[in-house]
Length: 395
Ligand SMILES: *Cc1c(COP(=O)(O)O)cnc(C)c1O
Image 1 (cartoon, rainbow, N blue to C red):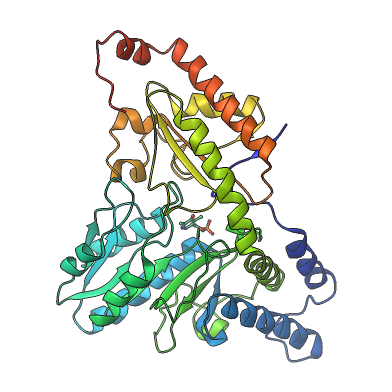
Image 2 (image 1 turned 180 degrees about the vertical axis):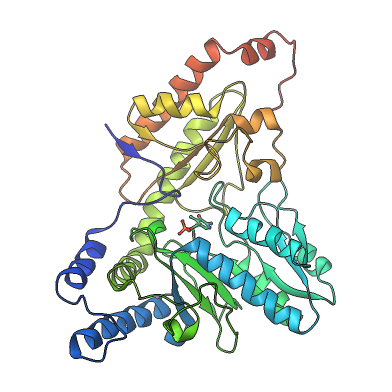
């Protein structure tokens, strides 16, 4: 059996997305900037895709800029808001401690350029408190950037409420919605979202393509100098095939959203229940306000890395921490942000199931995670010390 349970890292490209790409590669290969009809047909494909994507989040087509993915969209959104703020003498940004590194590292870079930022606490349940956002707002705050749903622990923030607070204070509100687009219903106008980042490969589109929504009137700063593509805001010949694939993938994800979410969340809850029976284990993040496919646990007395390797032997692809941090020995900043201590954070497991998960696969995951955790504990010195009372259990 092979179970792909790492959909938060990336997803399999859907048939619809592949089929949308092929004609762009084989026949409609013109440059959208060319005036002859082959080029103009490519331009049409691009604009049809833009309209579909805009409709999927309640935006206008002119508010969508194509990017190379979620990281670029995050960088561009935050830098743009920072530049707008700076012109008005406002250089303070509010975010959270468990954002994706595309956000956190951009904030760190801006700090070197004279900006300051406040990171809100996400508490034990992985959720921001709207009143704490309101309290953190200063006269010089120019931007609030808070992720829609967390990529590691899956918690979903009260976005509309946070957006309303920003609107009340006339502060730009950006959300990294990479884990949410195609999985949760989004309407940027109703939710008071000024800017939103998305990436196709998190909803069965290809890697290396994404988009940034920026409300009409928000002046984007271009990160790449060059031609006048994307209204001068993102230079470089457009990736027509991948844009078409992204639109097809998103259209399909939105059409099946309710059904997929119901199916996945039922099996998510079954797996959570099954893994909760492992002694000295704990679910990370709120049990209800979480993505339909996200399961994230800490198991005391083991190393996440060993757990992943043994699960791989049994055909289960999972992750420990985020794909970006694995390979480093530092525990996940997300788990530390929700208050897990270092030792416990090391023993974490993220399973992000897909919409094709079956009941049988869910049972297989529960059985194998239980067995592997028990096996690893059987020769773990850390576990032995815990069992003998030499050190104290935390979970
Ligand atoms: C995957 C991810 C990103 C980065 O997107 P890329 O397209 O891989 O650059 C940013 N934010 C979140 C929350 C993600 O899950």
